[in-house]
Amino acid sequence: MRDVFFILMAGLTTIVIQTTFAGFFWGSEYKPDLMLVLVSWAGFRMQFLVGVALAFCGGLILDLFSGSPSGLFSLMYCFLLLAFGYADSRFHVDSNSAKAVMIFAASLIVGGMVFIMRRVASPVELGWNVGQWIIIKSGITAMTSLVILPALDSLWSGYTRLVGIR
Figure 1 (cartoon, rainbow, N blue to C red):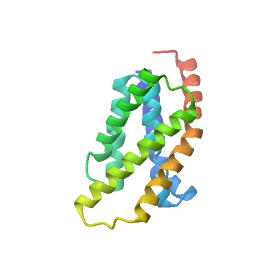
Figure 2 (cartoon, one colour):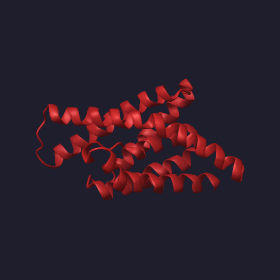
Figure 3 (cartoon, rainbow, N blue to C red):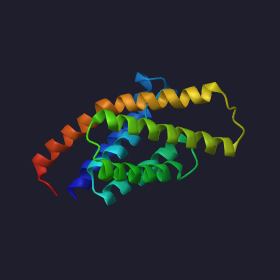
């Protein structure tokens, strides 16, 4: 239950920052995917059910705000949570730079899926500008994760010292 409260507060904060304030620091088209960073952190640190609930509910909320097809972000975040959890259990990913590389790859996948779904819904031009958008946004998300992941680890350790472990 204590995990749920922490991840709920982190998720709400992430959604508010991603949908409102992040556009002031980066261009609105290059905003980092902060929910993806939080989902990856949950895949590395949280219990499976707590992480899946975060990925699914956070994805649904982002679907509402982004105008993408319903369930797109929810499904992608759930699959990516599984991938991050598997990678951590199999390869014991401990360094933040390795996690940032994984987040970069995951962000490329998310950007590609968003483009494919929008292309299916209506004709969209395929050109260098689309590829550039996906690559730059993924790079910004990965660089932002280098700051956010240690901050989340610090907040989590302080929170568990305050309320106790599970």
